[in-house]
Image (cartoon, rainbow, N blue to C red; front, side, top):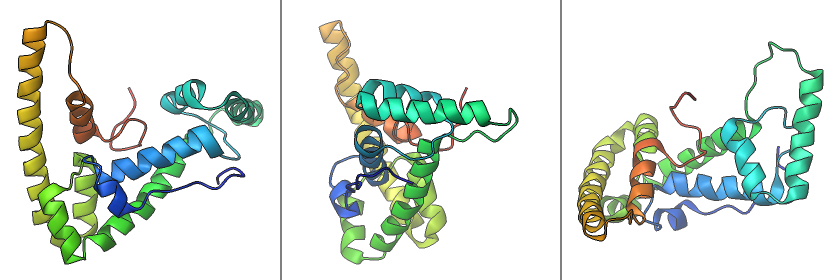
Length: 194
C-alpha cells in the first residue's frame, strides 16, 4: 500500500500522553507520514480533503506522482465505479490496527488507571473503543465526562478572553473542541461528506 519509504509510527502509550485523543494522535501522525513522506501506490481516487492536503503539504514530486496516478485511473475508469479515497481507505485500515492496540492496552490496569486520570478520547474513538471492548465502557464514560468538564472550563476562559481582547484568541481549545466532537481533520469517521 505505501510507497518506497518506511512509515514511522507512534506507540499508543506515547500518543496517549499528548493530551488529545490517543487514536487521533497516532492517525494524524500516520496521515502526515503518508502525505509528506511516503505517499501511496496505485491511487485511483482522492477525497476533497486529501486532494487539497497533498497540494498544501506534500513535496511537489510526491504530489505530482499521486495526481498523475489519479488522472491515469480516471482515463481508464468505469464512470460508475466505486470511488474510494486511497488515503481514507489506508487511514481506516490503520485505525483498525491501532484500535486493536488500544483495546489490548486497556486490558492493562496501570494503563487504564492513567487513562482515567489523564487520557483523552474523541467521541468517535470513544464509541469505537466501547464497541470493541464493552467492559471498558464505564472507564470511557469517565474519560468523556472529565474531558467535557475540562473543555467547558477552557471554553469559558476562551469566551472571557475574547470578550476582553475584542479579537479571536481561541488558542488550542477550539481545535481541541473540534477534535473531541468529530475526530481529527482528515481521519475518516462517521461523517458523510456534504
